[in-house]
Length: 318
Ligand SMILES: Cc1ncc(COP(=O)(O)O)c(C=O)c1O
Image (cartoon, rainbow, N blue to C red; front, side):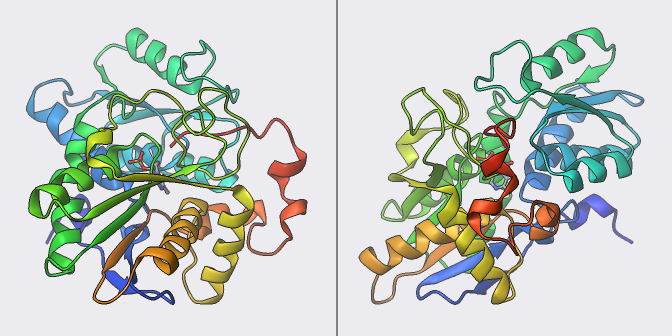
């Protein structure tokens, strides 16, 4: 019988209601998101290089999915897990972390990752203080992109039988878009690699970020993981557009999270203008809408959302 973590990957690629666009259902990974791949790769690497030993503690900062993946793998392999999160993280994600047995440290939402109170800074300090601990450090670890180069990218290429012409993914740390982009460019330099960002992110506002609701994506600092040389375009999306798309996708059977709504909105608009003939687009649907039901995205009108009326719900990282 296979171990639980060997079920990571090999997610299906399916048609969507949109012409030219297919969706890779990353929410079908055992931990529920695309981040199972990066967490698994970084933890395996740490075990192989002796950075992580039996009985050790995994520590990371995450707006949810990387933390959930780390907590799931830690639970399966018998490590202690501490995850720092921003206060904006959904209740479902917080409860999920706890259900896996992780210790959750809630930090204030900050505009900048190097703020000493940010969930990233708190994780770095906890890592320094905790003996026999390992921090995958998704924001600064180049293995984040390598994970997706090794695991997600070949699937994306093979499932299109080499026919892919456009790849769309949300960017947070930039690991997904960089890893897959690099692989696809090596296979066929003509494949267009298109990153999706929040219109309010650090990058999109030239360093003056504003609050935004989409969780998991948004380029919120000068990420050393992102390689812009493999990215053809970065498209920005407003919260309202991502959420409207989210609601219509659910009505078509795709109950996905806000980053998938943003990706689908941007990709659909792009496809209408720029795709034709035998073009083949693949979008990453990174996580499931079930992790966000308490936010009311799927029922209410945009003006009623928590994030619009509660200023403390600031922008988030992946
Ligand atoms: C649902 C979802 N989509 C997209 C992303 C962005 O991926 P990356 O950090 O590889 O850029 C994340 C990151 O956590 C995520 O959780």
